[in-house]
Image 1 (cartoon, rainbow, N blue to C red):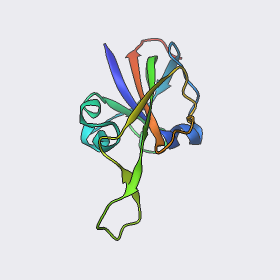
Image 2: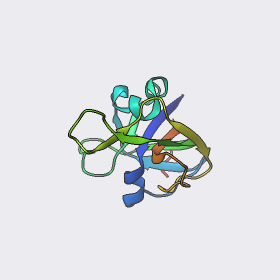
Image 3: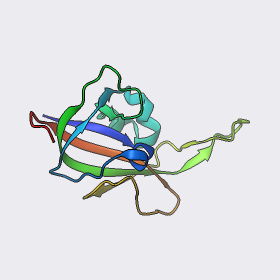
Length: 131
């Protein structure tokens, strides 16, 4: 059985280790609410996300899980300030996601016109082996 894991771009850029399909990795996996990802990846893809990878202090009480990486998809989307708000923060534009299958994840992605790199959707398979 495979699982889908969300990995934020900033998590990888900060201190994530590169990985590729076939690699065995040990990640702290936290359950997610798919609605939290609907604007970034679209509702249908968000419903597929089982966990998010975490290594910045929210993992207390969660043991690392050994998994084998099956596939990796970069997620890119445009961001804009919400109309009619005084808030100057930018948010993902729903329904505009660009998904790019890749052979390696290192936290960085090739620049694409009109969109920003947001993170990865990673398909994994649980394994009993430690990486």
